[in-house]
Amino acid sequence: MAASCYHAAVPDETRRSFLDAVLWTSLAATAGACLAPVPFYLLPPADARTRSRAVARKRDALPVGSHCTLMVGSTGAIVVNDGTIRAFDIRCTHTQAPVTWDGKAMRFVCRMHGAVFASTGEPLSGPAKAPLKPLSVEVTSGGDVVVSD
Amino acid sequence: MGWFGERTGVSAASVRERMARRLAPSSAVPVVTGTALVVLVLTQAVSGSLLAMYYKPAWDRAHASVESILAAIPLGWLVRSVHLWGAHLILVLSLAHLLRTFWRGEYRAPGDLRWIVKVLLLAIAAGLAITGQVLPLDAEGHGGALVAGSMSRAVGAGRLVQGGDEPGDFMLGRFFAAHVLWLPAAGLALLAGHLALVARRAPAEVQAGPTTLECVGLSGLATLAVLALLAVFAPAGLGPAANPLEFKDEKPLWFFLPAYQSLKFLPPLAVVAGGAVFFAGALALPFVAKRWIRVAGAVALSVALLLGTAGALSNRTIAGMHFNNHGLPASR
Image (tube, rainbow over all chains, first blue to last red; front, side, top):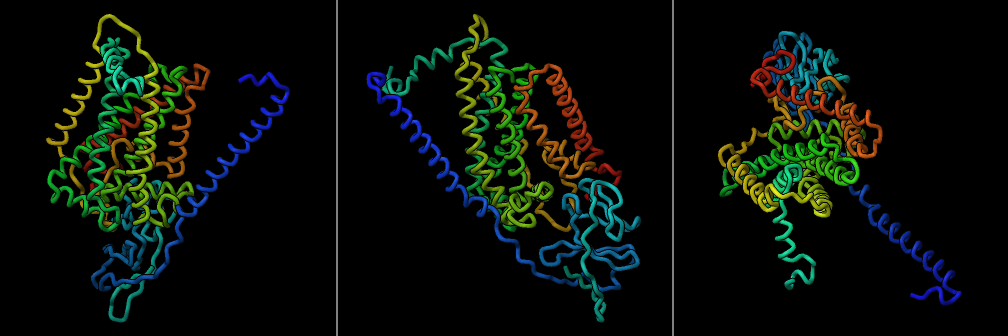
């Protein structure tokens, strides 16, 4: 009101604005502290890696040029025969869509954005730059093709 | 002044006066599209809340829960159809609403804050479209989750967006929370701010033309009629459940076809960066003083829109449906 009526007005206002600044700073710091746990909460621990294996099919049922797909644990896998039996994670390294096998041209094609991979998994053309992720494959004495990640 | 007016300053008389004001065509158009958008946002809020009652945000149950909404819940197909058609209409109308502001140069002061709010609202609508398309986890939604995951990994935010190393339960939970809580809350707050800014601006008084009530009422009725006709006569379907071993030639929502086409020749990081530059440019537009920069921006936007439309057409034509861009027949 009539603050200018007495001389203490100026130091009083300085003190008040200082305390206001302290209050605002405390409010901002408290709000920040309340939000600090959020980033931790948003980043859960890494998935536990478990190794899986699965039988694809009999060796004889996988002639040259043919392929089959199967789930190895939670990973989609594609097994092809280009002379050698090879297995890959089926997901394209560009945006993770499942690739398809072109048995005549002996290459993988991703129909989502058109990436093309050699039968060895190397990228040939299109937007993918990294090779398909190979999975280990073995033929048991019983003739089963077994894929493991 | 009645009981309510004494407490709020809003009286029946003041509302009637505002509604009786006649509008010139230039101010009637945004009232019509704006009303349609508000009506659509309200129907999305209601239909979305209804869908959330049966939807299950779990990787292995989501698709079945949407299937059961369509098959087992009385009028579930109608609620979902309203929600999907409402989403398409919101994207079309908000793009039109924003482009009109752009081409009329109304992003400059005093419209600059309204422009920024509109751009943020469109970004939220895009976020709702991305997350909403994933939720049913049909083939298209699954493809969307894979692409969203790849793009987030490309910018080092993979674990933040996916909640893990790969798309899965945690990612679906995040998308669900974003779709039903975070984005709608932010969107409704921004929309309230936008409407408050619009209400502050008194449109020019004109002698002839439709009244505000006619614009608001007819637009609201027409919007609901169009939505109802689309929802009933072109009910939204549901694709097959996602199969991680087989690609079904799924395409993203039309709104994202420019990004989809760009991904055919650009790495995900470049597409994310391009989107960020586009968004930052739209936000900075009111503060760009030089006319030639605005003109260049307008030309770039128009070219991008033309290319996006061309890309959309190339993938939506019969040839685009049956052949992908590499001349390979579709697997279907």
